[in-house]
Image 1 (cartoon, protein in one colour):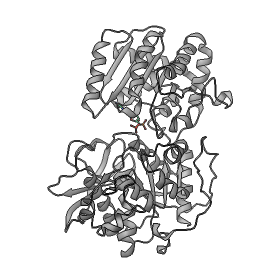
Image 2: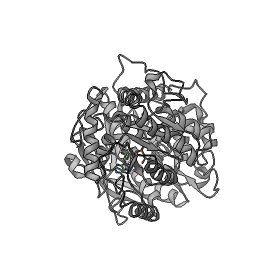
Image 3: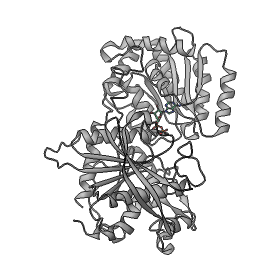
Length: 528
Ligand code: ADP
């Protein structure tokens, strides 16, 4: 049993930085622990692929939870029971806890907890019965009361663990939506006797922090405004009348990770922390970066059932059958040009001015361009619809505005080059998926892109580790300096381009290494 010594207020002694540390290159090969005890790990998350997916966070929970289970741990996942869940991916769904009463304002909200398997993963879905209608909104995010919706979910998740008698070794939370879980644990549930769990919080993006007002305290039963508005706890670093949920998560968790070492550095020391830099400095001894993996059961051209023709590094030519299929599906000309692709949320973060620039530049430089993306912002969608109409007659360009998992697979397989020109990029999954499919990334040197893509011409890595092209400056000439080299290489030095493809396909960006990194972190916090 633990004592309360580890409460964030206790000012624990600094210890040597655990592995993995913030750094600029991938961590060294993991230490294999032979007789590791099995852990009970619970992920509390707003998203998990494919049942509730908005972005990369959903893929991370899906992939990491499987990896941890394969390594002999008991892994459970708690999610809201959204009306938009992909029920076709949930098996044996049934009620397991009918009368969960979750404290809320002066009373409590009645919830039912369901259990089901999502591709073998053990998932609990919490359904509140209240007029707030928290999770029946036809969409996952985007509501004025999002902070309260997820504060409720966080409280419900920990109340469920407590009432169901579950005492996980590790509660692993994700982003601001679940950042209140460690606050509840140490402020409320530890006093009740929940002294065993340790909390790891993974921050997938600092842009969204859950900044809110005093109403939150009334709703969640965290009374004592002076205590929680204190800047050492949840008081926002910039707005003195605001609470910051993500900050609370950082202060109260036993360890915080973000999704690449480079982004860990950028957020703490490179001005990318959206105001949380001082908090990260205070808590730097429990902060590190782990590059995400990708799930090779889902993203693997050797077994991908979305593809008309499967291929591997030993029969790369079959990739070009997929290129033909992609062209056929999108009605593009069948010519000798490379296909440059962009897949992603149409969010300013993703470098949309440069995406636009790249479309015209690629067409000018003898390449085709394919875009698959959608935005929650109507004005951005409209801009891209305008662009689509403008380019409608081009036999070398197709813009698909929408979310289409099936088409995404075909693009990863059929394109030659994938573009990721982000303003900032915590990890980025598109370049990792593309690498697995032998599609060469052209990326801006930021965040996880810098940790995973090594420039063919300028990297100091050995030749066999170079796998793409990078540029630094966020402007047209910067983009052209990398994309131009990629297109030229494709046309003029096809054998070099093929070597790059092989390097890309041979590298291991599965969950193997990050799975071990997370287990090392769990051990670190359990042994403190
Ligand atoms: P983020 O989490 O910032 O959205 P990531 O690169 O980490 O970005 O993850 C994006 C994931 O979402 C990838 O799996 C990508 O293939 C997928 N994706 C993004 N946009 C679309 C879309 N319009 N259609 C299908 N898949 C998409």
